[in-house]
Amino acid sequence: MGLIKSFFSQCARPEGALGRVMLSFMNYTHAPLTNWGLKLVDVQDEWTILDVGCGGGSTIRRLLKRSQDVKVYGIDISEESVAKAKKVNASVLDKQVFIVQGSAEKLPYENDKFDLVTAIETVYFWPNLPDCLQEVRRVLKQGGQFAILVEVVDSDSKWINVVEGMTAYSPEDLKKLLDDAGFIQTEIHRKKPTYATIIGINA
Image 1 (tube, rainbow, N blue to C red):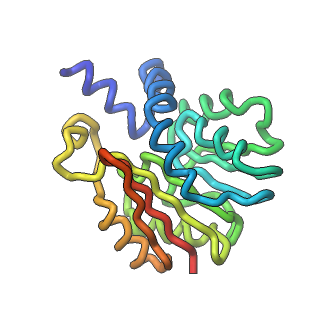
Image 2 (tube, helix red, strand yellow):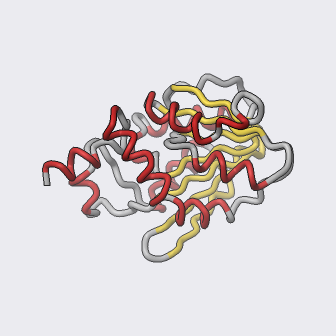
């Protein structure tokens, strides 16, 4: 159990050799949720997109394939994640893809920059979630979309005891948080067993 817990403690902020293994693991295991959830967003050509908590960079790569002339920005609190995401997207780095280290609490981007912001399997670890949501609104254009994809949707989930620093939110909790933050037309989409995508529009 100790080794398993050590491994999954890397979810929040992958570091070192174990963190690199976790990033490859996440790129693989998050794929079904990501592929399903991103289909719910009608990505347009020439959009500018931000993936917050970009992890190993596979979501960035998927977003690039969704439209023509899209620019995708990625940010992650983990140095290992940034390095992995850059490696995965090396052929388009600093041309179509721009990746930096940083926090959801203070996004290093100007106001009204993005058409879409995604957060995949990451809001569990965001500190001061209401403040982070205001940051997302700040960098989103009016009418821009915010898509949260989650798989752990129950506070009784086994993952809460395995992954340090993790907070589970139900889709209804997340919808309320988005509504309270000022997002509109917020929708919950579900897929069994526990996949959920919550999408809100910046008013």
